[in-house]
Structure formats: C-alpha cells, structure tokens
Length: 450
Ligand SMILES: [Zn+2]
Image (cartoon, rainbow, N blue to C red; front, side, top):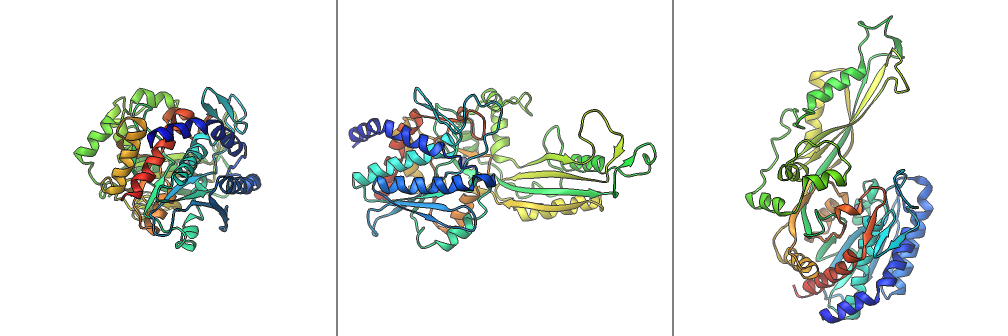
C-alpha cells in the first residue's frame, strides 16, 4: 500500500495548498468578538469541503462558538478514531509579520499565515489522510472534532461533549495540536501541565494621594503586591515558596528523564526560537525538565499606579497582581489555590485572592496497543521512532475528552518549533504535511487491526 499512498500524497499537493489557503484566509480569531462571523464562515466552509470530498459533516451549536463534527464511516462494527483539532486562531497583530497573516503565502512548500501550523494545517493533513483511508476501504471510522474556541480556553467544550456523548463514542482519540522539539526527531507528548490563574488584589485607599503629604504614612499597594509576589516565588531560581506547593509533585522516572534527554531539546535553539535574551539555566536537560516536569509560579502583570512617561509622585489606592501557576501531575489546582489564599492571607490579611481559571494537569498512557500504533505510525512516516516528551502548556479539551470519552488519547502533532506557534510569521510546510498524511493513514490502518 505504501506505493499508492505516495502517489496519493503527490497528487493532492495543490489541492492541499488551495484548501489550506481558503481556510487560513478566514480570520477565525476566537479572542475577538468582531470575528464571530468569520468563525461561522469557516465552520460552514469546512463542512462544505468535507461533504465535497465524500465525508459527512455538520456544524454543532454550543452556547459559544460551534464545533464542526465530520466523519468518514466504514461501518458501525468498525473501530472509531476521533481526531481533535481546532480551527480558531490566535490574534495576529504583532508588528513583526512580514506579510498579511490572513493572506496565505506559498513559497517552496512553506505556507505562511496565522493558523497554518496551529492548527488548520494539521487538521487538513489528517482530513486528507482520512479520505485516502476511506477510498482504500480501511475498516475504521474516522471522525473529526474541530473546535473553534481552543485559543480562549475551550469554555464550551465540556458541555458540547456531554451533550453529544453518544455521537462521540470512540475507541481512540488523536490530538493533533502539539509541537515537536526539533525537525530531526518526531516527538510524542504524554503529559501536559495544568494551569491555575488568579488575581491578588489590594486596596489601601480611595484615591491617588500625594507622596509628600502622605508618604511614610500611607500604605503602598503596588509595593505590597511586589513583596507578596516575591514571597511566593524566588524570582532568581523560580522556586515556589508557598508551603506545601511541591508536596504532590511526582518524581520523574529514570526512563522518562532519559527520553527528555534524547528529545533533541537544545537550550540555544530554544532561546533563539523564543527570542529570549536570558534563561534560568544554559543546560538543555535542566531546561527540558523545568518546562515539562516542574511546576511554576509567574507574575504576568502588576497593575496600579502611574504608568505614563516620567514619574508622577502619587501613591495609588489599589493594585492588582495577575499570576498563574503551571502545575504537573498530581498537583490539584483547587488545592494549590487554597494554599495560595492561605499563604497570602497570613502575609497580608488585607489582600484578597480571586480565582480566574483552573485546568488540571494530564499524564497519558505510554503503553498499550494505541500508544504502540501511534509510535509505529510516526516511525513509518518519518523514518525515526518518536521520543516521549511532555508539553509545558495545557490543552483543556484533552482533559474533557479524557474524562468523558473513556478512550486512550495519543498525540500525533506535526508542528515544529520554527513554525512559530502563536508567533508572527507562523508557517507550516509540505514536508510535515506530506509525511503527516502517511502517518495518519498508517495510524488508521494500525487501529483497524487492533
Ligand atoms: Zn493549537
């Protein structure tokens, strides 16, 4: 069959490029209310496209943006793979864009534009693989769950899954929305960090006051929040000082540490890819461990007081710190929030802590028939066995599908670090798309035999 998949992939290249262009040129920015129409347009265009190539598809409403469900059916007695992607994108207002982010550029198999790699390119790659599998009568049902709210934290995905649980019954769930560590080595994440976001608020007055008339007597909420943040986390090492913070952190096994080392993670490549001038360590292994397996505490902003040019010598009446924690298995966001509230309350009883959002961490199976099938598919398509890594980020939909669909989840991502996830000049490439189609076809074939 490998001869015919090669022929297929070669023959669909211009179709892939034209379809991706149409999808990318619909600005599905979920964060901005002005783009609601674009979200709808995209859902409709994608449904039409799937129907046009022989699949079934429908737009499923939620209280927020809809979800597109598509399927190539082989029969009710066949196993079903559900492939998850998202078709909404990040905003693209960075000044560094060299071309219009919503007019896809094509040059030597490189596709530039917002959403090319995150996540429309991988979604279309999987779709074209599913069509081929259907044409070849591979005995497997392939379903697509395409969300349009992933970039804003999937606020309605759980209610969507609950409401459609029968239609979503799956033997295997594939998530294709992750990034390799380097082009030379496929990577398969088995874990995601969780997240907790919160605000610390402090009000010490009713209006700005003059620091000459009141300074020394008035309390300063901006400085007090700085002190609280410093008490929570050692800004030099990143070590979190909230009592009990590390109690539930599970040690990383020797096997997993070895896999992290082999992932091809390189401190210098990482530094340049993210435009970072300074890092907490120059050691690749230590950095990989920090990003994937250690929890964090970050201060994202302290709002309060005067931020215009020069200095205005007023003492602000209130301030707010915006903070987050990335959590690792088996830390509980609810428990961490309680610890934070208690700790802040002890240090500064006048400060209030308000919860903004929570997402638990995830650790998936690295063994079993579906993990083996995924590993084989990557090895077959890319010529190298994938390494197990973890993702430092969080994908809310994964937790939901893990809770409700009761099917093992594997991650078959195709994005590369240089593709610029959430960054200006985001791109995807034909190398990843063409081998990606082979990878998905092989995975569907493997699952049909389990
Ligand atoms: Zn994504």
